Amino acid sequence: MSYVITIDGPAGAGKSSVAKEAAKKLGIKYLDTGAIYRAIALILAKSEIKPDNEEYLREALSEIKIELRDNEVLVNDFDVTGEIRTPEVDELASIYSALPIVRKALLGLQQEQEKYGSIIAEGRDVGSVVFPNAKVKFFLTASPEARAKRRYDERIKKGKSADYDEILAAIIQRDKNDSSRDTAPLSVPDGAIYLDTSEMSELEAVNFVVDKVNEALTK
Image (tube, rainbow, N blue to C red; front, top):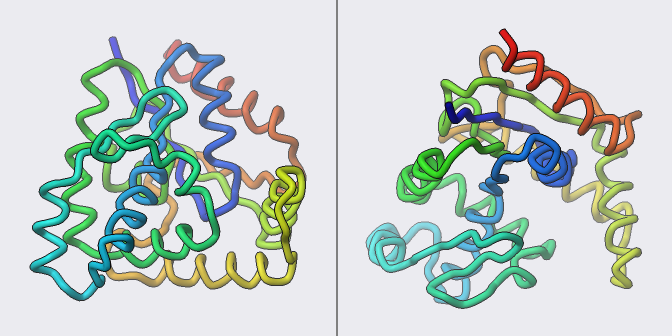
């Protein structure tokens, strides 16, 4: 029998890396919902469709096809994997993902993935809105400072320029935006296991998630 595991949490908490590694250990599919929203935001911005233009938004959303293929994100058959992982797209995603019309259009796409087998999904409302009946739910977080340091180190490792103070300010603002928006605000889903990774390594977080899932599957 297939099942769904969800990991919610704020930006930069390590949800993606933990979900990917946990999926490998559990032998199930990883669903990156954040990549879907980033891809949508990128295409809408490139098409110069403003967030307040509902008519054009509805038309554009009806024509967009998104496919998650292994480590690639395709929009209308074009690979946008590299383009969506930038601070600019992070900000755009926060703006567009707050729109009810965008979230409604993509809700079905996310829920459809369950029919292809067991999945672990990460995002900001996967446990509360997308998969409210998930087998196990997690809320993964870390202090803004810890998240900013991880983002900073990540960019430096990739040879990109980075400013810790700017990254920290952006994370704090993103938290505020995601928690205060009217539609699907960031919150701890009912029944979720709360995990603060500020002082944990990625491996420790992954093992914690895997152990809790295996424990739940034996009940």
